[in-house]
Image (cartoon, rainbow, N blue to C red):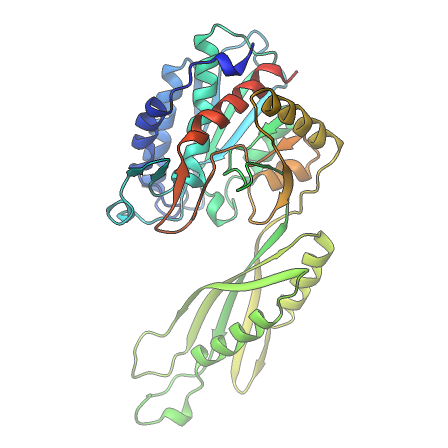
Length: 376
């Protein structure tokens, strides 16, 4: 089966993808994420998949597991793992409207990662229309919480991966048309400063500002960044009344490293910031962590298979480890052959200029179809 002969149509794919993108699905809005999962479940049911809904927990949306008809269904096969949550709040579609400009198509979550999820289903659809039976059964798992570190579904992803031989992750492709064969380790932290209240006008000097302490610590955290391990504070909340010295301030920080040992040292440095001085306490607690995923022989053999398919389609397929975590961190760290970054090309993820390169829908769709058709 030559994937180059499959009649992928980028315009038809865009038409289907538009409904996904315009169904906004920010992580913290479980109802919105579930509506997106409903659309994907319906599309896969029409394709003949058996759909299982797994209820959400911890305030997040649910999970969809779809198993496609196959003579070997139930045996270890291929898991396609993707997330349906985005970072864009409901209403972003008014600022980042669906629009096509030449080879670019814009929309919230189109690049990270609804485009990749959609082309994966199109690859399965095209193979089915060609009456081609893949050597291995295919399972698709769509989850609701990757953008916040996968706190509620890591166990499901790892359990499903363990039941399969390969994991394909259609996160965005690399700018050089490459794929991802490893990911850096990531740790999240919760920050809390506690001060002493007072009237900001009448008795300012009697108070101890939690906001001031948080600001001081933010600068200290940023200054800890090295080439081996980066630190950043991305969320801050503090104070309630402008005429009150703030009693509490909270924040969230992120640390990333290429090697697990470097991240472990970074975690120690962050936790060591906890303490009390000048009647103000600062507390750092560890949040969710993604382990470092370093490519092993199984992952590199999977990559070589993909590189050969890409070459047959007239394209080079470089590879590299990537920053920015994904659920491939978990499956790759488990030692299961994992190939990440199989989704669309584009740019400006997590911004109001997020777009995909339209031609990559067909190009990456064919690559995915080739993998599904040849992995055994």
